[in-house]
Length: 465
Image (cartoon, rainbow, N blue to C red; front, side):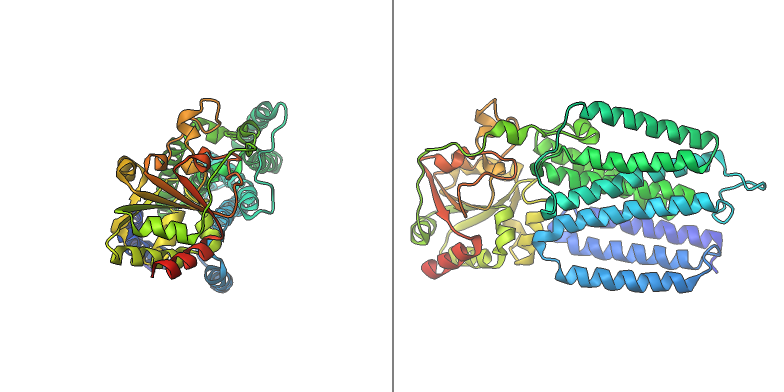
């Protein structure tokens, strides 16, 4: 057994490693190192925790680790990149469920968890910690499941809105907090279970009015919720490592949520209340009929690309769906060998989760130094000969700057419309996840290439090579 000082020191080292992991994940170049730091930190935390005197039944623990590790390993290998957003949402739900189960277990056996006095009555501070960790975990659990359903297509991505929705949420929130206060005054099962039940219901009600286009914000928000749930339960368990790790995840997720909201012109306050962006599809009106557009074939696109001085590629969710990142990398290699300057432009909310496109490009070994974020690349579009948009829609829609009636008006976008020529690879003129028609499709400088992204890139390879 390690001494208390040695445990504290080991947890401190693990905490520093997790901080370094978050720092490393801020850049593609250092992300692998960041992941390594994170895994090492968690390994130290787990090993140290297992040798604590409070841990007694190793058979159940190692059996759970074996089963969970097997399921996680198989899922990690089989889940395609297109399903990564919903997989992350599902992982968040498990964190929330774990917090709820630990809270129930701790309340059922406060003496065993060391949160009761000599008479077996739970400490007031422990009641408050249990209340916070339990209700945040319960909201995270059901909210993440709804987000998983929307992202996976099991549930409709359209907002579910009804009269009095916010008032209902407010009333339920008041009852939930009131039940929690009653539990903190006199810990009995009735207020505890009422609080948990309402929290789970609120998790559903907060997510159903949110449209699919806003899911990147929801994923980062749920990441924050899961962190705070873990931190709350860390106080209940008296585990400093869990408190620190949960607080780091919670705060970083909150910061990321703010960045995502800024990128989508959303209010973080509205995100926390639920229901933001709910009117987008209705207001958009879908595709506007009888608008002229130009379409071409791979040969036409190849002619523009190989005669360009500079090309900027804008990847979107369509690239992920078609699994076209490797074929696109071949196109980039050919163009660069022919002397064309090629760069990638990444919108903060491209895809279905933060960093989705960066991961796809890294998987195809696209050099990090040609991948640029929106604020960095936007000034260059005016001097760009050709922009190649692959599967991106809402993040390139000029109506965000030109149409005050548009639901996405004010949302920062990639200024691709300023380039000399725009090529768009897309299956059809269908609307994006926000339910909006894209004015970029109908500009004179735009040529539509109606095709699956992978097939289009393979055709470009044959023509360019």
